Image 1 (cartoon, one colour):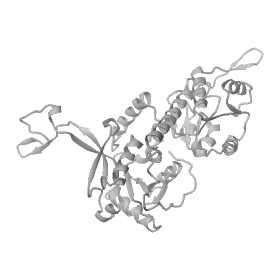
Image 2 (cartoon, helix red, strand yellow):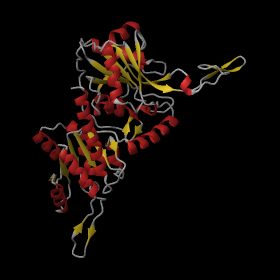
Image 3 (cartoon, one colour):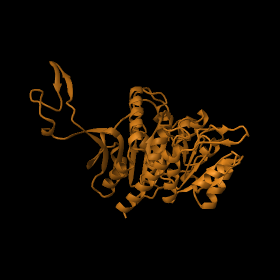
Image 4 (spheres, helix red, strand yellow):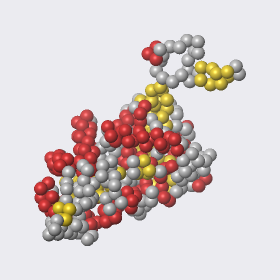
Length: 411
């Protein structure tokens, strides 16, 4: 998936005293799953998913992607990451993740910015929860640990092969204890490691000093190394989205009309009068967004008065008959002091691509045109006219609720 991204941003110096950076090593080559860092899961590339997640971690000051691949770099920038060019000698099959981390930190050091904490993250762990990363960072910042890393509880009986056959590794083969009688064990997930930066630079590896484990939900501990892993992740995502939609933290929601609020079909009577069918659940979603203080706009090229009539019924702003939607969107956001990166735009067709490329949260309906799907980072489950606005509203409201809850917890 090729993303149109802004020009490369300069590396911003990170405050040394309490600064925290996240580093995602993402090379272009991969044996198990070719180009896996750009493979799409839920309509967005793995590298984009990782950057988006880490930008939601409150303690992180900057997200940096280390790559030698221009396409990965463009995708990462499109999601708001800084990019440091990774030398080819550090991007081969034998290169370690530690070498990429060291290179990033050396580059930052040349700017006089050595962060207190470095978070090493794998883009191939697609279900990282921002709150879990925050817990790991806090353990290091509060001087409880030098390294905190993600683990999942395990009750597996492990075996290895010996000269006389299978041998129990973590159990006595002659005594099968009940699960509750065995000491707890944990599997390293490989998803994230929060480290005291100077300790990492001194020791050269990710495990040093005082270690602490951050236990995560085993259902979130999928690591993608093979095509089978990817298939499993797709099934897991479908289950998660059905039961636990990912929250979106935005200030405004802008939608197209035809193909979003409607199924993109129109009824024409013998007099040439057009009418469309809308979904009442979308109206409820809009009402809840308004109550939550989210700015709303319907932005459409359609000239038919039905667009304005529906907007009036919903009580939201509307711009229709618009030939230049990106310019109109920029002006609308500027007038309200809303950053484009804080806007979710929901579209379905080629005339939405310009807006999808402008905003921080480009969203498409499930039955969108392939070009619009390509431009979107998030693809919803519902089709246009089938309650897709309500689906987006639920995710935005979930983000608003979690943001307010975290504010109370840490106020």
